[in-house]
Amino acid sequence: MGDGSITPRLGNMKAFLGLVAGAGASYGLYKLISGESFKRNKKSAANESAGVRSSQPSEGTLQPGSLLARVSGLDVVCPRPVGSASGDLAHQSPGNLDPQHLKMLLSCLQTSNNTTDRCRILLTLGNSAAFTVNQNLLREFEGIHIIAGFLSDPAPEVRVQTLNALNNLCMNIQNQEQIKVYVPQVLELIEMSPVNSELQLGALRLLTNLSVTDKHQHLLKGSITLLLSLVVVSKETLQVQALKVLVNLSSNPDMIDDIVQAQAPASVVLLFDARTASAVLLRLLTFAGNLKAWRASAQVADELRRKQDCLFRVMLDESSQLHSRLVQLLSHPDVEMQSQVARILT
Image (tube, rainbow, N blue to C red; front, side, top):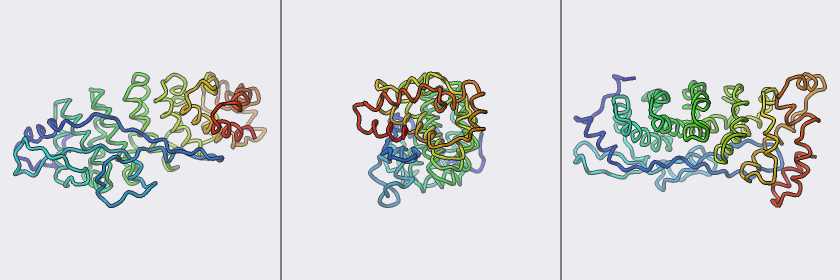
């Protein structure tokens, strides 16, 4: 995966790797802030992405709702200029990374044979990608393709850090044009990884950001069954993340036909229950509300009824158990839940 156009300016690459490896950077995963109000109309999970936690933004005050304000980043550690002692580390804001630092990190990433080094380099690159200037630079340096190459790394922890870096890079619209080609590989990671693993979570976070707008949602047409299955078999954190993607997709009227035809586990209806975690139930109700707003013609409805186990039969058909379960949820102790249920039933 080497790129001859990216040459490290440090005379000793091992010394540079030592700087990155000795940084002691936190291995925390990005925390997504829900932030949605679930108003009485169908909506996407566009505002559910992460918020920047750095106190030193590189491009002025963060504007609420901006792409930058919706991405998460940890403080990044980068080396001092070449003249500094190799052991003298500087904790700098991600926005203060110079272009040559990014080039050096990308070059080191391509040549490193050490799993720990690759993880720390990817973490640093991912944190720097929380800032627009670095998002653009990494794209110009072919960094997106270099980073995405590690989606197939044999070490799971490297693949996790790769997904996290791509997640932050994905907050840039131009970057999405390059990242979208890796959607099949990301979906394969979800299918092949252990349930509730950090790999699945990181992949779903990336798909959430990529599906915020309508532009690339068609790439996920074939993943509806996979997402619904994750909602049924996973723990709360992964359920929420899978539902964020489904809410995004179901907010697009052009996607509804594909969604309702997808095969769905019948047990998804059982989650419409007062005992279901609130964060999961609220998103389930939003997803159901988006689907209920769709009206099938009599002919289309008859065709869908002949499709065994399709989502239409599981959730929207008159024979579905969903209606009776929604009626029971009208007595849910949470007023917002009651409001969502009432919106679906009316």
